[in-house]
Length: 226
Image (cartoon, rainbow, N blue to C red):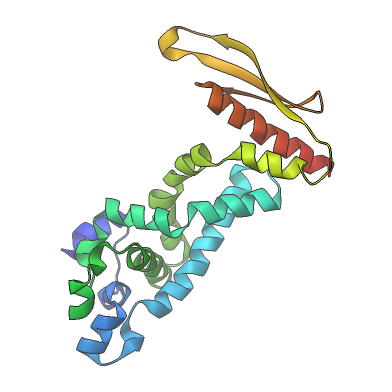
């Protein structure tokens, strides 16, 4: 059964006891081992740091022109509890959890916080078992693909509004400057004006997406000029 999990993770652990610890909830460790230290919590602590490092390095190279603040926001959204739990659900991680009776009855196998913690614990287990590249491989295969979703849901228009409101009497305006292609596959071009001056331009398959792209470019431009 564990082999299916390893296949989903893309990594085969040499130390199977380490994996069992990564899958063991505190309730299980207390009931079976009578030792809370044999739960995933210590591994989760380490895994959180490894995940943060792997993600920071990835985003640093992926977005060479983005400022530190924006990279921090993207990283936080990419590795948030919701996304990690979604990845865990995709690989049916809940089926492999070792839970105490109370946690089992309480629906622990589908609880987002537990799924998130165990994902981090498994990343740490891979790091201990096979080094940073082993842990990074799991992150790259399962978590980095969530970046597209994060970027598509990131509200750059609100972020831009908050940025320009730091100064008084600022006016933002989005202007459709072009559209092309057939009705079923149109591409829109939008520019955003700050006090009548263009500060960003974007293209998208809808006006809203084009506006988001324009706002993202404006944030990058204005952040550099601060």
